[in-house]
Length: 464
Ligand code: UDX
Ligand code: ADP
Image (cartoon, rainbow, N blue to C red; front, top):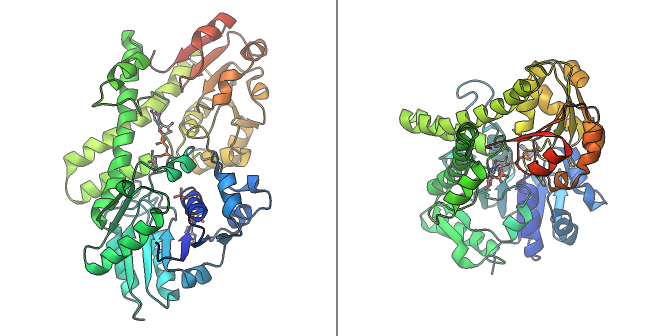
């Protein structure tokens, strides 16, 4: 039985929101309060219509509906939630640093540190603090230093409990994870804290899937898992370019190697490049850590995964330009998909942003349709790159609510996200309304190329 009755989670984002909703859903006797500085986000989580919660994940609205107001609460009163909780999860963002030492590589820990200082200022009794955000190795130590130096006699135990959920399948991943990893202190008090968190998960996860380690192994395992996964995508993407030159088909190659049980079939889908908030950030962080220990070969090895990914995005864009007779200036290019993968409204590091940026350099007009991404997000993503003014982005990029409008009068269509609905469009109708010759560049390998060619499209896809 779990001894914990009151949990607070700082950060109501893609990690904190779904994770805590599932804990509340599965542990009705634990009160779970998710707090965030962002009042608008909290208001959206509390929206009467549960379909308006700020994160789109299949099945999440139902889980939130089942627990919200019962034992799941969303609030901006951070101090109160910290004060009441026995266990505090930190799920705030840890973006790559954009300034100072480690710029462009190291994780920016300022949000984490702010949380630690706030916990230290508010806490009146002993607490277990759980790192949920992906953090550099030895962050727990820094957290402990801040927390232990408050002088008010409160004792803190720090646990690392990295989240392995993937967006788009978050609810399923949380309900039935391959494993839950909990790192903690090796002394008696550390073990008690670990047990308290194990007991929370044991409400629905079989004990053999709950793994306990020391804090540093746990922190490094998360970075390692993401680095390995991203490396597989970059490896198959490297092969995709070779396939295009040699007449091999990357899908056939992936199937052939995936049947080797030592290699396995997952994460071998060639694409326009991986995106998401984790892969690039975590690898850069790993590279930074390796460099800071003087391990330049280790750093270079992992950096190559990012270099390959950037190359894949670039060559997708340049292939479009080359195929459209070396100019896209003034041409309408329809983007199907803006999210970094299907079944999420998250666009962080999405390949679409970088492909759009390259095509905008070539003076293309871009028309975006994504079933879940709002127009503000598309403009914000482009503006954030800082490559051109916001007015210019607005002028050359339009965002549509329907795919047929986006594709009307387009010279070419580029598929950037693998949304299922793209497969079942009326492609004849789309073709009839496009400029001819009508091109499709399938960056996700989801469309039926031969059917589209029969309609009259000039079709190309990655790795074939
Ligand atoms: C990832 C990890 O999978 C997850 O365990 C961790 O907690 C967070 O980072 P996420 O970024 O949500 O999850 O999505 P993921 O499914 O891993 O996909 C990442 C990117 O790789 C996406 O852009 C996806 O389209 C791309 N990808 C993935 C491929 O291009 N090919 C593949 O075969 C798999
Ligand atoms: P992730 O994908 O890691 O969940 P998000 O950016 O979606 O990242 O969510 C992180 C959330 O953490 C944001 O909603 C942000 O407002 C919140 N946040 C950041 N710093 C703090 C803080 N000191 N106190 C409370 N909330 C914070």
